[in-house]
Length: 196
Image (cartoon, rainbow, N blue to C red):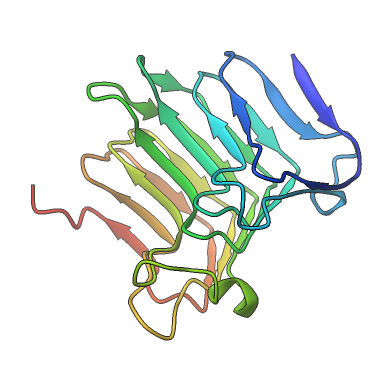
């Protein structure tokens, strides 16, 4: 099934979208990412949560989540096949895209982030907290993800050291990162960086 969102700006007011049915797609009806804006206004913790396999989120603008505008996570069972395509993610409070297991022993594997723009502006930078705990895509224990043809820009702070524009660590493997444009970030691409 496909959920098509009509053009407009939607103030979420603390609500979020949780995609927990396998095979669902969420996308703009027009196919124009700039025409559909889901605005968390730093009240909504996460704008889109993906907790099922073969879910697609495409052609939307997601802005001003308190934490992560997109959070892909396994809960109770492993998930695969997440597709994040032609998204414009603006001014996250933490990482723009987060991938991690929410339940021990389960994983969020074989995903794709492509043709998207992840951006932290000067206005959004003022909202980042926890010693600059922000970044582009940040994944833990993720296998077989592909990150390609994205623009990632502006992830840095006056104080503190931002996460990477692209960061796969803590048990991640078989990651493909190609043809991305990284501009004005504190750190570019990071693999590993965990002592355990």
